[in-house]
Figure 1 (cartoon, rainbow, N blue to C red):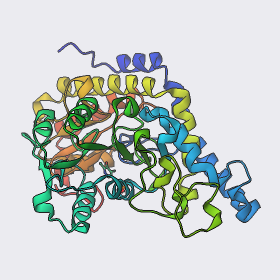
Figure 2: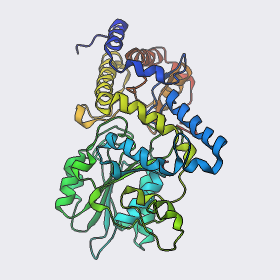
Figure 3: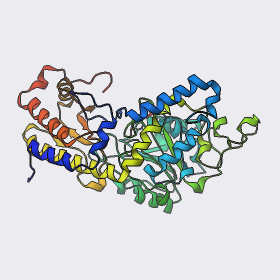
Figure 4: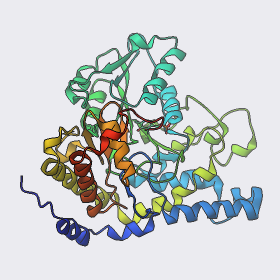
Length: 425
Ligand SMILES: *Cc1c(COP(=O)(O)O)cnc(C)c1O
């Protein structure tokens, strides 16, 4: 393979990087290479500032902060939905910032899963994140249905990928709803969202996507593709902090549907404070909110989304693809003799923002990486996830990460750790 493995080459890539200036917007710790932005994005100075601004409104205005101050809280979830819309290719009113990934999934399934006669099954996949599966199982139980029978999990041929063909085959006349990840959290496979949406709709099936591992890394066109709904967290690639408030998308063709789980913050904003016992939902995605929004864990998103607006998701994706390609090239060149395998798809249009590096000793290789200053994450049983994030990682960091892996393997530094995961991996 023809790849320049010199550090000079990595430096030259940084010199040409048009997003390089964004790194100084973030709190990047000295002596640490952070490759875990796919699990928890780093704090930016602007996110910190917007959080402090919102705290200040509380300090200065008390309850007045709902309508006054720099970012009046009452309208903030809608305004940030509008600012999130370019990340997912949606109209402004189709996105609301609210809840968490899992609670949003509950809300959307409670709304869009309407079993009728024999059309009563949900299709998911066997590699999705556990929380999504738990939510689907419990939603089926609420309908008095048995998840063993009514939740169809499309199987993977290799433990890494799910084949679009297999998903389409599972879309029978017994299926009411399909729920899939955009990008699989372990292998980083990017599904063909447009094709799957078309195929579902041809068969009269609704389809929703979990965008946790793609939003903030990859452009989407949810509106144009006709995706029925989507939901995602903002604490991974969108950098709004641990447990930061999530978001959801509902296609405008579904506006006017009553949310399955109603609450007063889903009300039409003008009549909410009439305090009527007749729920009058907002006309757009705002209807899917439930209770009072979590302002302090929404606030960092104000600053975060500003950075995306300036960088644009297209440039973020371009750099991310280039940096992950460079990392894979270096891995193939420098680590081939140590028993590693790359578990993510190779083609650009089929992979997300992280490299999935597999090794039987992955748990303890991760521990040694951390001890020597590189933060990866581990997914049992054998996956090291490495995400060079476009807004704050450099090409030299990618190079150094691979050099450290080489040293850990060469000198067998990993042998001094147990090959088991920690409580949080
Ligand atoms: C991160 C992630 C979650 C986490 O759900 P929370 O409700 O935010 O805890 C769920 N699903 C997927 C696919 C994820 O990647």
